[in-house]
Image (cartoon, rainbow, N blue to C red; front, top):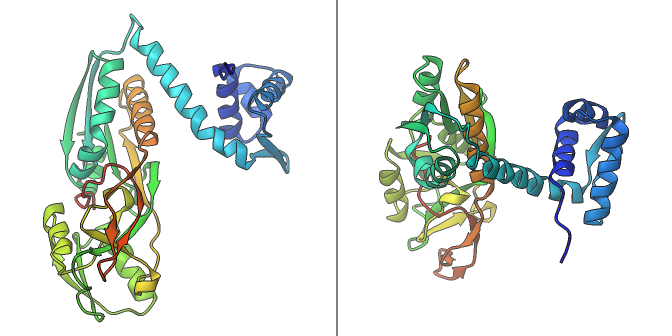
Length: 316
């Protein structure tokens, strides 16, 4: 049986990545630089791969080191969860959390389940609203934390997940007219709407806003009925939809990012514990194989997507 990875070595490994150097990492983990170097040599021997390479005065990850990083963070978080579950001095109190309803549907069950097991004495008060309103409530001190669509133009948030943003249409209908593109999108200040319009204008493609709605159900229904094209994150693709590409005349879109906001002055022990669970839960979203999508001629197209395949538009 292979020897297990050493938690202490993994913590030092992550510290080096986060600090960009062995010297600064040594200060963080309270070890000498020679001890940190020894730990990394032993970790490289354990995995049989080189993890770091020189980068000026600092270091950077090799491809193999980058591969290990995701596992290291997850192992450390799970270790911390296990320790917290048996801590007699476990956390107590309450947290006010905000999330768009589509994020609540796709992500919160696992987050809540993990957190409740580790911290059963913490009460969670959850509000479901769109990202813009949640950001405002954080500023007013009405929420302690919020999971939002990251938008650096309008709010500061820590990016905790990134995934492809896709053009989607009905798999069972022909595209609704080559010109202009008929769109079903969110409200005027919606980040995804702005990205879609900017991408179309960037390639000189005409468009028309056919549906604008706060409702994820309404917009998704317009797509599935073959009446309009919209945009969705990869984890939100549904059976009955097909992904449109450059071959269909649709320009590539930047990835969608999920951000975490925290209220200044919120209880640090509680917000740190919950943020760790949020990040761990989002890391654990794995690829699943949905029933095949179809192209516009009805041919099946296999596609690997992330997440649970639920619709997602309300976060706009």
